[in-house]
Image (cartoon, rainbow, N blue to C red; front, side, top):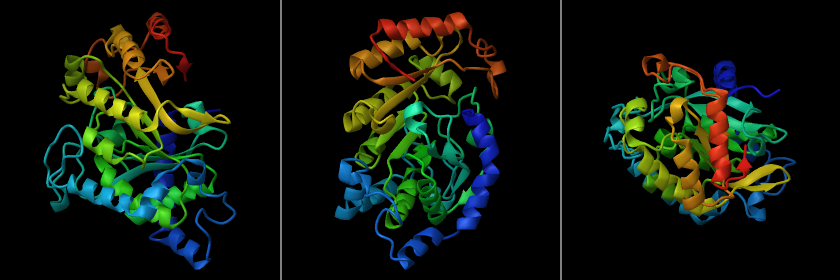
Length: 350
């Protein structure tokens, strides 16, 4: 039985720390090279890039991935990684709007069987939950890691080894959750993991508040995009996501670029290989603007776009301070949301 994201994180914080400590430094990478294992790891299938997937391998071979890595680090200090453009001198230890300075934390890591079916498949999505967040919603279900920053400080080498361990365990993808404020760190770790044989699809699992410049730099690196599109009204976004009135504009532009890069979700034998799947949480009194969202998807992307119209909203964190977020969703509200989606012509639901 699939467990919720919240249950997965709660049970995995200690596991992530234990795994990082056990793997340590360049452990897996060093062992692979010492054993003379070919790219892909011992007894692994040929790198999936040979089948038109995981283009990051081609970017690494040509040196382009290293160039993108440098460009992303240039945006790190002063920090211009997300639309908040806080300008924090993170390399000097100054925390950005996300409360993160130079280092980063991992809250949980492991095969996750609670994601959408094409992402979890039969062996799970190789999920790595990062601590802190650049969006900071008042109703956050994982506020302990997003707002408070619970997790274990992790090095690039340890993160690379987590990726390789998830691949070894048979996961269908590497699922980077809440990556926006940490992108340069993730690409540095990715390059270490590639040297150790990483070859499965890379999944960018984001709250949607992403810089168009950063998303463009991820072209060819990310295979699957999993963005939220939380709101369709700037005033609502400003009230519930730490003063982010430009959320709608930036998220719309970022998702259109994600779709341009990877297209409609490509599912082979039940497993997502490439493309975009958008999550949209239905909220009380249609605060999320679901009717506007589904029409936007149909008009700006296409009606074949894969969406998860989520009905599991419940008051969490500070939601009780912001009526009507202080109550759960009704069956009628969710049914109305699904009716709007069908009327817009959408049909790939998860």
